Length: 202
Ligand SMILES: Cc1cc2nc3c(=O)[nH]c(=O)nc-3n(C[C@H](O)[C@H](O)[C@H](O)COP(=O)(O)O)c2cc1C
Image (cartoon, rainbow, N blue to C red; front, side, top):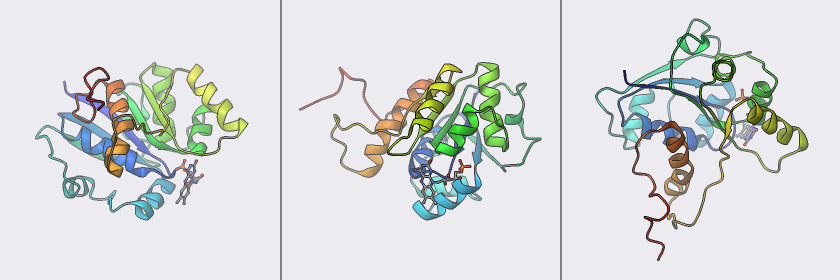
């Protein structure tokens, strides 16, 4: 069975993290469930040319080379009959990139008001990988406490904090320093970054 990954995109700045992740995933034989919050749609239209109603076409325009076995299904916020709403849907992990402080709070509070939040809640109860890519600065105590809470419940916090030691020269290259770490945690092969030790640091 090919891998199944759930991708959530929230209304935080940095939707490019979710888009670059999708670009990398569709180049593999992966079945993707894409959940976009209402605010996520707003920020997508503000920060990118990605069309959530034509995701594969958008990814192709961005240069993605679609794998013939890749699949991408988009579900709406109230699509309660969609597979990610149920613990019986077996998958290999969920990533929320970017993750807003509001959705972080919902996950930390066990709320499941939208399909995206429900899918994250299901990951925690089923002990499936849940990777949150929070984007906010500065952080208040409530944000920090919510991060501790989700971490204790089993989520992986992988903040949208790009690294510079590989000397990225473009915004996508900078973003991919984070995307590569997400893919590592999902055990998805990629060519986005070399392992430390194999990197030419000169
Ligand atoms: C352009 C724009 C950028 C935003 N950036 C952030 C952000 O970086 N982090 C954040 O937590 N909220 C950010 N927000 C606010 C969220 O969109 C808002 O809290 C929303 O309720 C989040 O809903 P969601 O988690 O369901 O997507 C931003 C809003 C807009 C319009």
